[in-house]
Length: 66
Image (cartoon, rainbow, N blue to C red):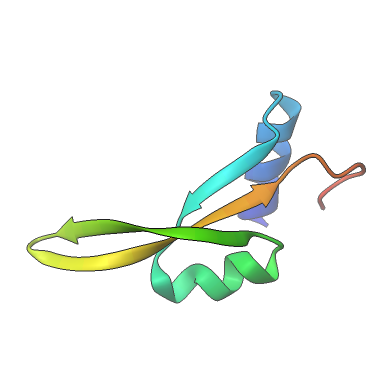
């Protein structure tokens, strides 16, 4: 899975967490993967404003993510 591969690569390079600025429709996926919502950020694309969830994914757990 692409998300877990990216998380493994980030951890291998010394990252301890991933910060995710998610599409609201994708928030449930990231939360299912173990990310925790910690806030919102404002976004505007082509004049359309919306709030995007901010999530954190912990990379410090021992063992493989896959």
